[in-house]
Length: 64
Image (tube, rainbow, N blue to C red; front, side, top):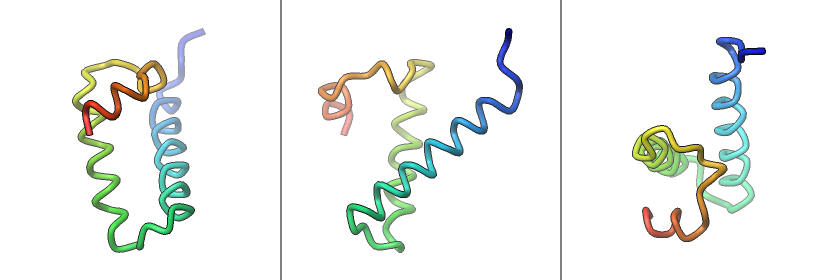
């Protein structure tokens, strides 16, 4: 069964909700969280269709 049109935005929303929770737990000040989110958005765009789940830790470190 194909994914519904809402599945991608819902997944992205959950991803960023979880990411923001991680930033809170890491004591990143609220004013700086936008910077972190922008860097992650740029990283995702740079993957040209590759799934984030499939990337290794070394690939993440290499990018950042």
